Amino acid sequence: MLQVFLDALLDSLKVLAFVFVIHVLLSFFEGKIAHLLEKKNRFAPLLGSLFGVVPECGVSVVAADLYTKRHITMGTLVSVFIACSDEALPLIFADVEGRWYMGFALLGIKIVAGFIVGFTVDLIYTRGRQEVETHLEHCEGETGQIHCGCCGHEIDDEKENPWHEHLVHPLIHSLKIFAYVFVINMLFGTLIYYVTEEKITDFLTSNYYFSPLIAVAVGLIPNCASSVLLAQSYVLNKIPFGALLAGLSVNAGLGMIVLYKDKKNLKDAFIILGILVTASVGLGYLFLWIH
Image 1: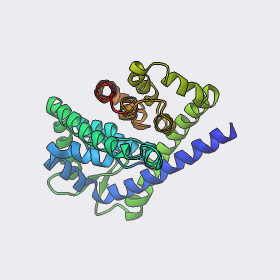
Image 2: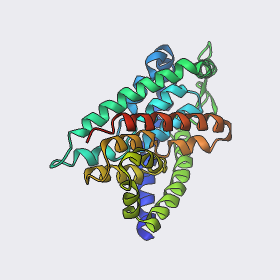
Image 3: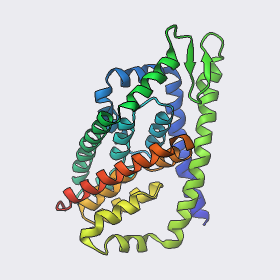
Image 4: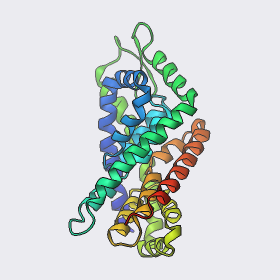
């Protein structure tokens, strides 16, 4: 159990570092980023897909947090989630004596799928774009004097201490996310410790044609360990490519947890979860024949 604690702490510290850096940058550029995503809203899901492929579990956390503050649309968030692979890509590319080249196929499919699904969601869910517009107007206004900080507080640019605006507020916000992430990592790390990865792998390989569905169930575990487990199972020829793709497409890491912790976003969270599961199962069976 000590190892579970240390692993959970290490993973959470990595998320903390990544989230903190992102939010420090956002404290300087969040208004400009919102403008970029709004002015090019049709291509925002493509930007989301490209952002999502960064092999770091903090990516989905940052994206979910931006969505709850209405900096990005639902389609953009979905594109990030589908493109996310956490630690899977480094593991697949490290298989130099095996099918390392399939990492490129995985990367390309997830970027394209993320964009297509996200673009479609934004076409249907027009209210999401309107909410981003409203937030942008509130954030910068006509005069540009009032600005929404990373913690949702209003900042008067002429009076706010730069240290508070660009360091203290991002740090407080990041520490809150760190605490939540650590608790989740401990819970699921303990679960995997007692169930064992071997049993989960055996469950994955129990039926070839049901493997995408089983992989989706594993991918829904909000922990970096699930992406590692799926990647390792593929490298060891335990699951087909379609199952790997399905599991990793639904695996948004701790991003979904960030959505569920805010009661105001529960309805959206369930809608996003449904979109992810549907798209991931479809992708899994579409590419099940690839080995």
